[in-house]
Image (cartoon, rainbow, N blue to C red; front, side, top):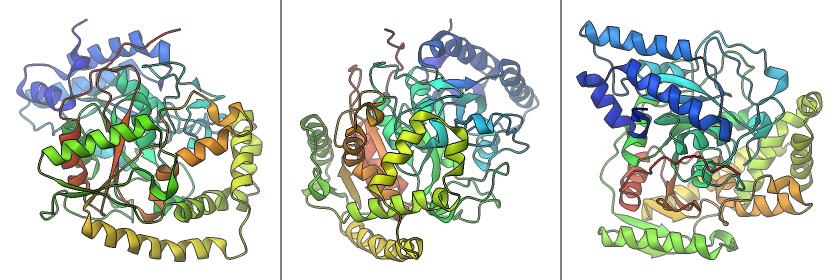
Length: 464
């Protein structure tokens, strides 16, 4: 094996653009790595090798003809199965949607292809993309390549697990309640939740998303280095008229003070000592790079998290939770029941009230981020969970939800967040989270590169 799969996206693109490597050679190597590593982790659940090679050969033909290939020339990328890719099922982890074949690419797929990326395969997600654990009755369970006893995270667990195992140089994920940030944390890679409106997305195969999802769900990249995240974001953020929420904001904002807030225990969160140690080490790295870091409480997250749940559940309740009943997957039904207990039905105007309150919380966060352009806080209050902890015991779900406060609370405001892996080559993954103002992903990446200056090395999956 030539092991091009060990290279990052930027290096691969440079080699393909220069002609030092062919896109087909990179694609063949990526397919070999997928065949070698994926059986142990079940991260990629749909791969058509001939289709992959056709895309790569077309790129090589364009280069031979003197055409520009784009900044991701020949880079193997995976797409989550909840995003439309023409000719493939947009399953969202559901047996109900196994035959929902997309006729058109989601804007994310379109923009990655325009940038020269080669779509390597489609990655697993829990049913309904609902959990921080990646398990479903259609595609099976995805395992964490660093430790199969741990969750790979969710809902972009297949994306993070494949990337950590060297299957693809970049991965697409979605995040409405931590679904990019938490899998990146659990698998020891980096994941960026962009600002609402930064990355255009739309599934023509499915009904229009409910208002909660429109305001909180985003697509974004996962990568093994911060520079690769920057490259992927630029490609994904290209305009597409199909998403009315897309905003033509510049990728680089004006200079900002190098000042960060350290929030170790937001709103009384019981932060684990290992998580606190990672946060304080990251704060020290920023300080040594010339940043001012102040330990301080952050604006509210608990009430935004509650309102997030109101919006999450409203559309499902509107349909009488019919899709959950029809899918009839025991684990999804158990999670739904636990969510219903924690967030009982609101009054008649609950959704309108939640959307009204959203503006006030966003205003508080905007003011805070004016003073502290970057906020350093936990990805999760605990190290990565044992797999399926949310359904293992009666109180398991409550423990998980409490630990994930920062995952659930922040999307209500549409703010960007970056999960930075800090564990290096250690088998136990660990990381920190950075938050910035709207459309200031550049500040997140700037701080993230200080905290994690070296690329994460892909791992061979640990088997039991």
